[in-house]
Length: 442
Image (cartoon, rainbow, N blue to C red):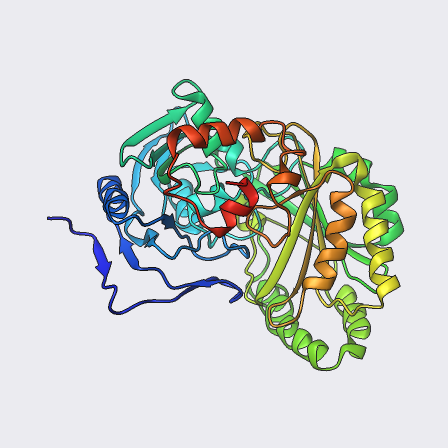
């Protein structure tokens, strides 16, 4: 008899994402403890004519995880299966949170070469939506995957890599959960390293004029612009031999917990109630986060706590279009006289080869816009989206956007190949939901 936990249909459970803007009430909620139990849940769903989705920790702002059928929870798939320190190959189950995975790697003298800026996601959730980070040579998470184990629509469990089922590998690394349920991931890790972070305020014009220089001179460069001001906060991360020299505990608490979370939450609540105060608040924020330099274990530098809830849209555009795109976004904000309390985040990435990576086949710049979670976002996000789609922008799969398959097939060279593969392995659309139907077209 199966040991996985199934919540009774007579007691429906509503699942909500982190931002609170997406929810679903599935027919069944299942917490499988192994790939075999995932397979059993998929076969049972097929017998009942139900769709299946695996959720993560809910950090996607889209409806990517939603289902009215069977919702698989990842909490039972968290084992570290194997570590090979000689090759750097590490296999972990799909539900393991990134922060736990980073601790496991550190214990074995290993690390991921690049990361996004939060580590609360599950391994599968982060990769299926192509979480990326910023890097000159080091690409996003999907480019660090060496192999996948997944359960297909027929209930069979398969593995894939560059040598075994290479088309499935290239499609499923950023597969949106539309090709199967990822149950384990093998990573190509690197020896553990220390990053030196240099964070420095810089004026808008200087950042845009020096973009090429700053990108070329640093392994990981990113910056934030505070709307309604000329203030930017730049961050340059580069490897050093060590030893680590982290921030003093009080400075870390003051900057990363108190100012960036507690005070920022209050500032957004004030700005929501009194929009006229936003420009002043942004000016203060741009000045409050001053220059600092520190070094620490790589994942501790790549990531930071994000406790203020928000909604987000992010697009990847050709790297050479970045400066012009930012100027146009600023112009749109000023013409509409909006009050935007969240900074705009800019990151860079080299080309990736996963078929649905936002950086597929080109040097890319990512522009992310945010609003406080209870605030309306439609007008602002739509206007920015118009600017970025005019440049061939690709929306982040886990962040809000309005694009559908008719647009996406024109900006992803392997989009048709992805659809053809999906037709072969999931003709009945066992893993479909409203979001995948919109972005994949069928």
